[in-house]
Length: 400
Image 1: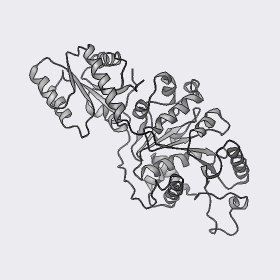
Image 2 (image 1 turned 90 degrees about the vertical axis):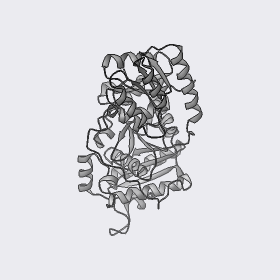
Image 3 (image 1 turned 180 degrees about the vertical axis):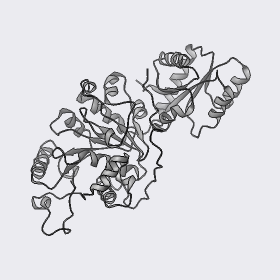
Image 4 (image 1 turned 120 degrees about the vertical axis):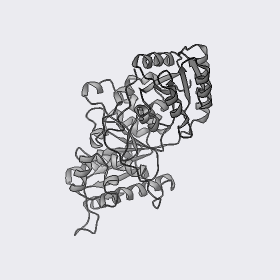
């Protein structure tokens, strides 16, 4: 069974948008993931995923709409259009790159044939399913697991990688809060569409966090919405995201949670976060032993000492090395930088790329690269992600 095609609809009137969406959906091959009256209203959908088609209604201002289609950057998305029966408008639409035109939006067998052809082309052009999954777990509550997950994802994105961040904490997940996001879709939508879920759709609805370049699948806003989320939904989401992104970073709940266990089975690397206080160190040792029993020990695990000092900076031996734990990274305590990061919704690798926290996470990414045979280059030039004003990226609407 081929994946459904994700489409966005641009039409000047709401009734027309709804009618077009129903017609596209009736094919069984297309789902509408965004709609709007102007191109900028569906910009987030086009930028957030690589395979979103367009249906453009030329009934309002055909010259303006066709000009926008002609100006679309290469490679252009698949564009369908409909509206006036004027032969000149239809001819210009075809010259602008419209694949099929439907006068007065009359959908018949031709739309189904076009959709099937586009599905077949998408299947042939689908990228290889080779993304890596990194599971981030905390030794106990309060060690900064979500912070490490967000910073790790942002640091990977700064290397030019396409990165997804999955908040697998269905109840009270904090990734969206940490990044100051108000996502249009959450894990609740993933669960709701469990029988109709594919990688292209999941990549489309993952919210793009513009400052970092990370695509976020957020936890539900309320506990009531989380009730319908099962461990299998999270496992399926992780598998599908791996096919669409270079790296998927999953912020996991406690390790004994069924969802965490299933996600661990689908992950290539486990990042265990701890601090240097005695309760955290005791839990870290227990987690390492449990991970070993579950078949996730050895080189598959990297320990991150959060809010810690590297050995040699203070007198005496590091508490972690004293109990036989050798961290892959020591993340220093910098309350000021973290407060600024949380207040702005920007990871420290974006807010203070030359600071000591950013350097620590860059070092972690470089160390993780050894697990993937040099795929991460510690000397690679980082990608500067443009910072836009808050609110420009939150335009993706719920599909109806």
